[in-house]
Image (cartoon, rainbow, N blue to C red; front, side, top):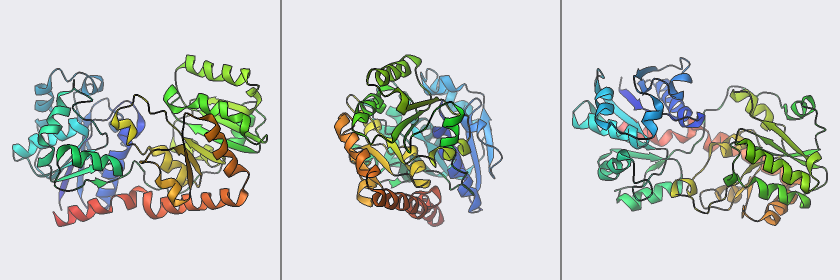
Length: 381
């Protein structure tokens, strides 16, 4: 039985921790002996939940892990302490790759896989030692994985990789069952009178997600439609959004739910009650990591059959070509409003996009399908 060790730094938000854990779970189901290594206060540890693989915690504080790297030598020593040989070591992001590569140099692993969940380039993130380490040694990885087609192209071109990295999108394992839709019920319980058609934004509330542009676009939406805003964010920004809605006479059509209770069931139950999901972003001033990005939310929407309106970026245009989304200029409210109308005023198109979204998730984008190229590599290794 081949042994696989995954160095997953984890960060202070759920998805950065969840994807490596899903990968570990699926690899263990294939008969591999899998161990995940993470800082003791990481979400990786908190979300572990006895999923069929072992986890090793390290006496390293996450806040130190992700910011300064003032003591890289200590970090490496802590990683190496008491860790036995593994056939294959997967390093997540530059910190995990640095440790995995050091282990290979010390002959504590046979093969190194670099799982680049982020696209961090030295010229854009010059203050992290691990990013520079990645630049020097990435070509020595036996395999590079990244999370989108265009990230793969940038990595190959920027670092002169001999072959294009394998793409594993930021997706997730298919849940055994889907919860019943609860969005309308939740809105009523919160004192709202929900519209017939609900457009959903679910995520981090900050300026880059173009929510002001969405609100400005609502004057062009069908009158029986409304906007649901759910997630966490800066209270001042939320106040700005609600004030804008009030100024435009839209307060009765905007339903702000705030942060949701934790748990995937709560999230999916809300999604299944919406008509359209929003995946919009303003890209001016962004680094490449933000531009060549296929967010998990896109696949969550698709999994429950929710058509999407997303930013017109190459990394997202596949949803339009596949027939389950519309791409728009996220800084132009009139374009957003037009896309909402295209879906809500054409029931057949909306229903077809919903069916295609769910089908594409099941056949292509769920994590079970996404890891097949990696499984083939491991089989041949």
